[in-house]
Image 1 (cartoon, rainbow, N blue to C red):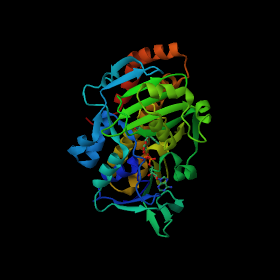
Image 2: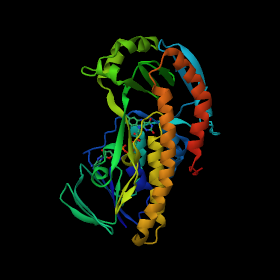
Image 3: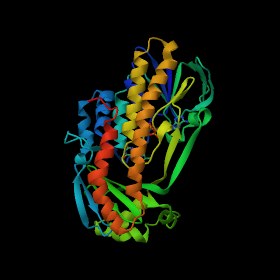
Image 4: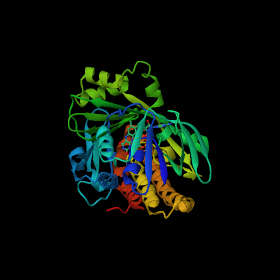
Length: 377
Ligand SMILES: Cc1cc2nc3c(=O)[nH]c(=O)nc-3n(C[C@H](O)[C@H](O)[C@H](O)COP(=O)(O)OP(=O)(O)OC[C@H]3O[C@@H](n4cnc5c(N)ncnc54)[C@H](O)[C@@H]3O)c2cc1C
């Protein structure tokens, strides 16, 4: 089959890695002129890690992964309230299961292991597409016109093809996610929880990713000049971050609204959605990348085992049935976690929810969802 993958994020690159290039001609187009990931650290589940190893055939991926181990819970004054072994929250037997990886390393690994026959066109998008039941006629922004058997939309949450062919809803939550680096201060992996913001810190080898989920009110009070909200300044000082460093972090921060994308369908004629294009959700539990790899694996496995392109419709039907169940389950779990994690709660509620949510509810809900349908061990 002649396959076009739109978007060279984790979903697109992983699909290209999983596809059998003896059976399929694979082209990737990426709208950016060069790869420039934001470089922040991302959270990786055991299953995502296994799929990354499968995609890259690289046992050396461990050099890029940092085990998370314990997660510490601080109050808004930086005082530690409790600690919890993160792998035990997710009931995983493998001690090294929950890890983080730098986004640039993840991209680098997926790109490094692409088959030489896979072509990537940078700075290219779709200018026109005629999506027919038996093929898709595509005109690219570089002027070339080609007919593809399948177009895979792996364009992330702002997918152009989803806008063209699918009906969907977006639910925005009243918070924004702010990401920034700390380059000097070394901290532990922790979560701070107050009525102003939920702050998560993920240390890497030489940098620390900070994720600050701020209420729209707090964000609005500081967004124009990216000023550190006064409500949070005491906290940063208490964990040892200097005024200059936090101000620099805020100025260079990346801010995204917290949202869900709801799409019932996965494919329409010869266009199929995967990754954030189909199911963008909030970063609360860090499912996004693992799910993107999961979609990529399932889709490529189905395509690799198809007899000929005539069976494509039923193959895509099976793929979408399987994925719908899985994604809905994880979305529900993520929404429960949203409620507990980002609720603008009073300190006593925060204290209560920290302990009860983590020790009991998370273990039951999350564990069940994570195991559902994941069987790549
Ligand atoms: C700052 C941040 C932090 C995050 N942290 C975590 C985390 O800790 N753990 C986790 O699991 N997930 C995290 N996520 C979510 C995770 O990044 C996504 O779920 C994951 O990247 C989805 O992969 P994707 O390939 O579907 O989409 P994307 O990574 O968004 O990739 C889409 C690609 O398509 C390209 N593109 C877009 N439109 C077009 C077009 N029209 N034509 C051609 N190319 C196009 C884009 O340039 C991009 O390269 C985070 C997200 C953000 C923004």
